[in-house]
Image (cartoon, rainbow, N blue to C red):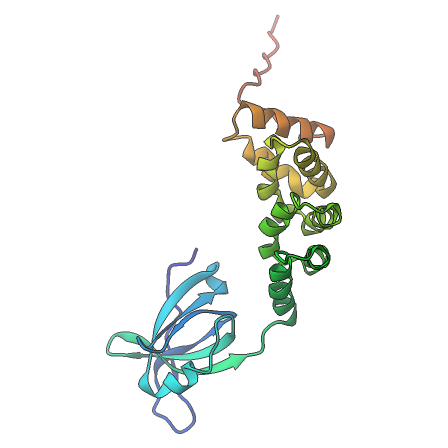
Length: 234
């Protein structure tokens, strides 16, 4: 993760004196606190790290127009050694991200038809935030919901593998079987995370992972695999 702050440049609105600062683009406002004159935003360019900004008095009216979840371009300047948000411009949210937000809510809906539809759409959107909720949906009481979650995790592919691996030692046969089949159908993108998981896996999980890899045609070396002896010269 990057630790260095955004580089300061000379910026200003038209007609204003230029000051050291930068334009910060965020896809998601995390928290807003007009009383303390602060807001917290997510920085995608910094691996999702969040930062809390002080807000200038003249920007409080704009601050109140923001909502949690909004995207925004924020003009930040350096004043008295502090970086202060001076103005905000709300950015239109990615329609796919907005749809994914709605589907993630529907995946917890009490009506199974809404959960079924949400599980299907989340696979089409391929939003990584859906991985853990879809894994949980493999235990849904309704078979159609479980099937849609199964199909969508295959579509999400490699990123879903770390969340599926623990299911290989589930006490429920259906869950273990579903996880095994999904991993096999994901195919090659699942191989590296499965092999990596062997490093810290207990004996039971190691056995399950090795079985999945074997069925996929891969035979990774384990720490217990004896080294082949070198041929002796005669």
